Amino acid sequence: SSRAIAGEASLSPLSLASDPMLLWTLTCRGVARANFSILLLGWAGCLLQFARACEVRLGGALAATGKYTSYGEQVRNGWTLWAERLNEQGGLNLPSGRCTIAMPLDLRDDQSSAALSSEILEAMLNVSSAEYAGLDFVLGPASSGITLGNSIVAERHQRILFSTGASETLYNRGNEYIFSSLTPGNKYMSSGLELLRSRGAETVVFAHEAKSFSASVCRGANATAFSLGMRVAGYYEYEPGKTNFADLVYQIKALDADIYVGCGHLNDVTYLIGNANVLNVNPSALLVTHASDQRIIQNVGIQNSHG
Image (tube, rainbow, N blue to C red):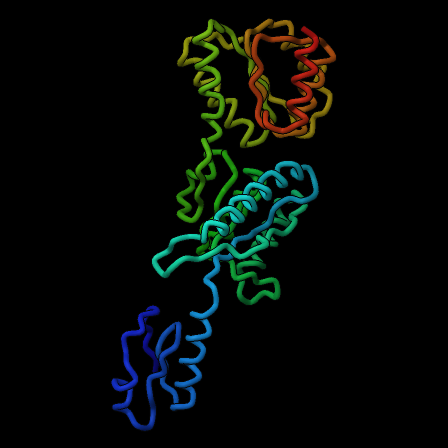
């Protein structure tokens, strides 16, 4: 028989001595019946565990190759910087004491593949797998679509997943094991549109990739524009993987809207702006996702140089 005491060392050696043949062995995870030699080993194991520095293990499946490489690198760098700075300050202050973050973070390349990402995470969280990683928390991948599959795996293994996905569909499924501090995708463009509206912008056109995150951003922005009394001159959806936007840009240019809003991922937004450069499309304002990426910044700079 056994009794769990939830890590509470409430029994003393004297209180265990009432049974001369079999003693309760105090261990870090509970109390089990054993002989006296095992009791001593159990105590020694506890002392060794408490002597080791407390560490929180973070990791997951994250793109280092494939189409989400750039975003994956940004996510990896952000988490690594956070962990390094936190450890320099002494770690996390938890009820059990101060714990540092185990370094390096255990992030494994999912090659920007949803199926492979879920497979990798399943192996990392499955105690019966040779790839088991003993993670305390899961770091989410670099895509809302991929995050959805990983959130299901994390939920099954009861591990909280810190999500970098912004599509609100991730958070409307009743999954209690997914968390994010990000602005939801449908609010991404709200402050930008509000500012531009206050400065006299009246018309706007939207274009987005036919994916959940991209659609979420533009649909939310469309609703914001309507609430601000702006006129939506056009709303376009294009297929994933599109690289030639000349046909779409020609249509958008003819609308002569004050604001162009592009909702997509890094590659398609880069191509969209590039085609706009070539065709000399110059709206008063351009709102796009992934605007912090250097390729986007460079393309916008080229567009501004056109006057």
